[in-house]
Length: 86
Image (cartoon, rainbow, N blue to C red):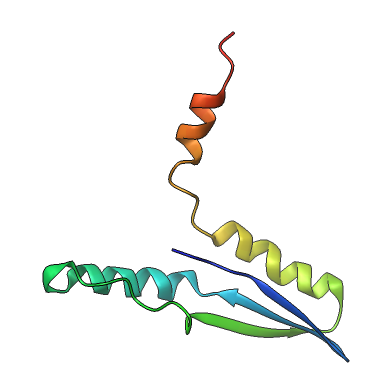
C-alpha cells in the first residue's frame, strides 16, 4: 500500500490531502475476495482533502493521519536484525 500526505500552500492557507486508510483496506479486502485473487486496486481516489488556515491546523490534521498509516511489514525484523547484541 502506498500512502502519501500532500500539503499545498495557497494564498489564504493550506490544502492538506490525506490517505483514507479505511477505504484502502476495504478496497484491498474486496480485491482479495475476487475469484483469482484479484488485482491491486487503484488507490488514487482514496484521499480526503482538508483546508487549513494556519500551520498549527495543518499539524493537527497530519499528526493523527501519520499514526493511522500502516507500519511497514519489515520494521520489526529490521530492528531485531540491526540490534546490537550485548
